[in-house]
Image 1 (cartoon, one colour):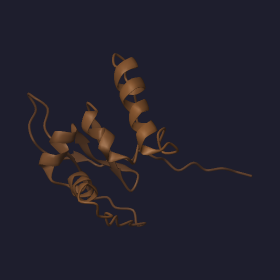
Image 2 (image 1 turned 90 degrees about the vertical axis):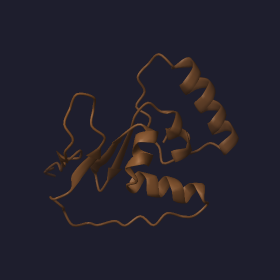
Image 3 (image 1 turned 120 degrees about the vertical axis):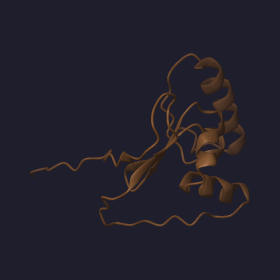
Image 4 (image 1 turned 60 degrees about the vertical axis):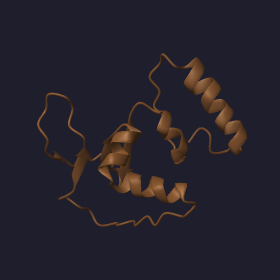
Length: 121
């Protein structure tokens, strides 16, 4: 999270002047826990337990009314969101995503983003 060590005022200034203004024409992979900035991003990828569970614009994800919307709404109300961590490997989850134009609606199988590495010492 590139803005996590900054106070709110400085972080907001850097996001607006550097990221949104000077880097406007570039593709930026912006990883953050500060959801207030995601409203201005073209696409949001929401991850849970190391897997992508929701993907789309902020507006799309709010309309899905899934985990992203629940956390975003609770933060807007000043509440601390309850995030449940399940250490068991799940296989029956599906990716929540609004269909792209010209595609059929349906679920996308869970994609594992992080792979375990075997290390010999």
